[in-house]
Image 1 (cartoon, rainbow, N blue to C red):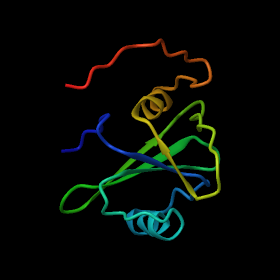
Image 2 (cartoon, rainbow, N blue to C red; image 1 turned 90 degrees about the vertical axis):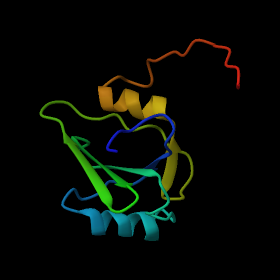
Image 3 (cartoon, rainbow, N blue to C red; image 1 turned 135 degrees about the horizontal axis):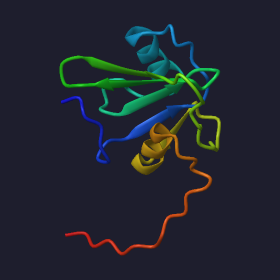
Image 4 (cartoon, rainbow, N blue to C red; image 1 turned 180 degrees about the horizontal axis):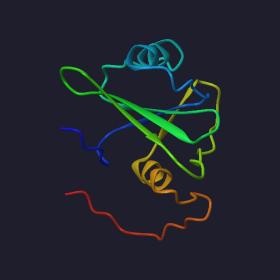
Length: 117
């Protein structure tokens, strides 16, 4: 119910967001600035200006879930973004690394063979 996993789509808001925004304010940003539907099933990621806080907005079939993480020390790394659409889609691997505090610039992925069954 509350879990996040690799089967979900993660959308990053490309601008810093005031962390006083709640569900209504963040869903308005998703709709008006990111051009996406808040009820569309994606996970929407918002960072604060100082990158010590992150909020995640998610629709869960009958209501919104708002995750909030604030670091006591250090900052979150934000991925490099191309374009000016107001949003960027982020793969699960990148999202997971950022949440764990691992620099995505120093990570080297080894080639693997994946077979679709």
